[in-house]
Image (tube, rainbow, N blue to C red; front, top):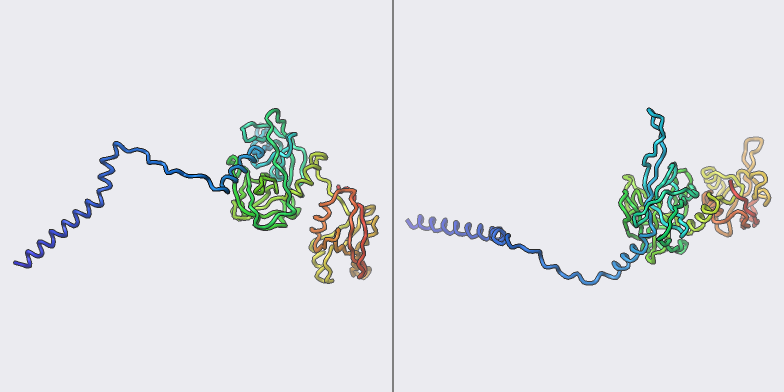
Length: 374
């Protein structure tokens, strides 16, 4: 009898505990049901002042945004049935105002192959653009639009030769066609190389981890002072989206190439008149233990011929006799053909430069006046 009473009381206690637990768990639901009719918005917690770096980033974006443009290109296609020529969308990209004359800088690959381009400003105004000039070797192009009143201010120009790894950078553009997007990061490396779509090697690129996606091409890369330090040109990503490695053409190159594109419609590289080949040059350097650029041929009438540079020769027995080896340009040592081209690219036709060459085991210093390339 006592055991039965004990079991009965135990079961009552357990049942009461379960009822209490169920009531406790359902209390918020019951409370919400009862008070739902008079629910009100929650009281907002004051945010306080923005952090200093947030304020500076916002100010940078708002100041630079008006100078950045959206570019949409078209191409002419032929309808195979009607034989009518049609303008169809081709691609999109970014750009920025270079000056108050309506010149817009973007990438060459943004406009390459297009038959037309439309430029839209941050305030919504859109203009048909005229192609002024391109330099595929630098992946740069200049367009011109006829802006009347209310012209946006061009971006302030900075320098790139004194950049440091770790500096903050800001990229503005139109990734995936989204209007005026800001991404931030740092300079992760300098003096990178990347083959362009034409096969030429673009040198001295800025590498950044700021997100650069399709559509960012041609947009500005800014430093923390809001100055232009590069033109976003490409990403390294197997998927085609930002993977933390983006590249920008340094502004020192832009500031040298763009004025020539505006004035001449194309970038005329200075010419030395020496023929060299990268793979053969590497093989000769390894075989002979000489770091430099081997002059394989010298163009007749060229600057190199006038300076007396001697080319390599093929012997009657099939052997090879090395000619002059260019060791340095203006005191800067060379190891590869691309470095020689980059050194010449920093000059202009008509400039006189100093070359250090190796001839028959003897180091010589000669001066050369560069020609205009084709």
